[in-house]
Image (cartoon, rainbow, N blue to C red; front, side, top):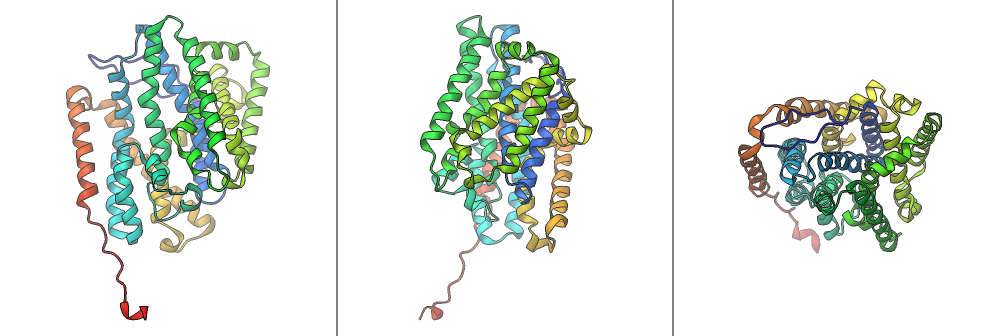
Length: 404
């Protein structure tokens, strides 16, 4: 879990949960899977995104419920302010840097899609923009779109907008907020899964893969595990069996990451993704309730935990790095190219964490309150201006004499 940030006057910050190294290790495993998938070494590594979703649903719901228990309500302004300070600085820095670099060195088609996609990334609607353009995720995930991976960030941001409203309403309606949240999360998960199964098209599963409504179950199952009824049920499992269950879940997730293969695995979209998300959520709950099991200790391995601590910046940067430092551009291939792009991505993620994310999140007083709102508006305005200030590349010239 994330470490506590200092309280500021006039803000409502939930009592922090104890730090659990295994959860950072799970983040590290998730981003490692995504990196290996995008560099062609792990066919099911994209399932790391589902692990991220389950973690986000768990951690955010845990924070919201802690605040609701302590105060009887949820401060939406404070919650959204913390999310903006956590997510926007790194995202804005990456968008500005990648857009400028792409415009300077990338092929014209890549520049066009970058300038077209950018405003939708900024609005946290890139997944719906891609669907509106009929951009197939599985056959179009290539060098012409440097921001396509951010569909998952958009899904999470949309969840952060809606889910706190639901938790607040449930908190205000009665005292049994944990039970109400658990029931709501489970029922909404079932509805989301039903939508995925009913809307799935074997020809192109993009709609159900990147649509917020059909992917919400991954976040909601994590949210359900954060509630007291589910945690109490997990706590009643004897330590020996909890350790065995956690190890079994790790093995099941690893097997899925090796065996799954996108569109070649239709079982994913007929319940497989939901089963993976449920296994991820239960593993998170077991690691939180029994942090001394062998699986939790293995996940707390320092290199894996370190990767998890920079996972957000690493996710933001890795795909633009892969696109802009392609084998054709670098002259590298195979493991040499994989090692190179991973090293560059990790270096940029570390810079993002220690120069951008942590200073603004923890130490910048100007990023809170009214001055924070002004800074947010200024950053959004600057990004909006950038998308329209960077000129589109000239259309390719056509030699009419060759048309005869």
